Amino acid sequence: MFDYLINYGVNKFENKFQDIDINDRLLLQDQINTARKNYNDLLLLLDDVNNKSLTCNEKMSKRTKELIQQNGGVKNNAIFDDEEYMQLDAEAQALKVGINMIRNQIEFVQTDLRILNSVFYNKY
Figure 1 (cartoon, rainbow, N blue to C red):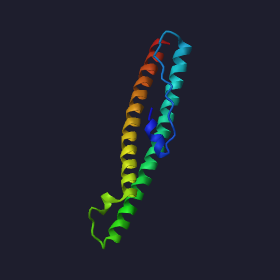
Figure 2: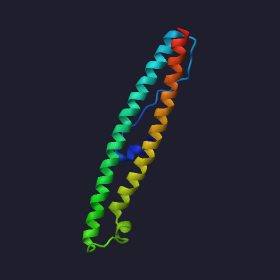
Figure 3: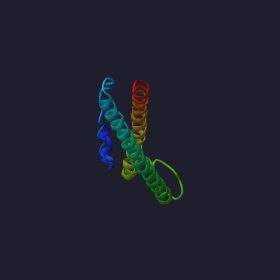
Figure 4: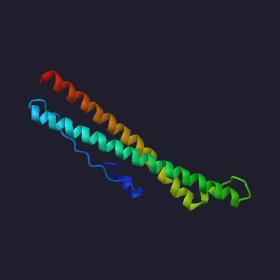
């Protein structure tokens, strides 16, 4: 999951997805711990991607300023013809999509944790 983010220097996330099984207490505890680890890993990944996104946006701003200065203070189509700016823009868009996907995955893990914790405390 999130393989396309590897192209932008983001570590790969290994989701340890398991089917929910509520019949065995030890298995349920293991599932809770795995979900908590996934949640923590996703939060760290989100922090990393947010940092990369901010850095990318900063580079885009600097490049825009450089291009405007090169063109005598006029913002024109030179920005959209600049290869470096286009690469930064593509990276920013990929990171933005990645942030949304990571947030969706975090919500999924949170839902699993709620279910697992509820079952654990109601059943055992």
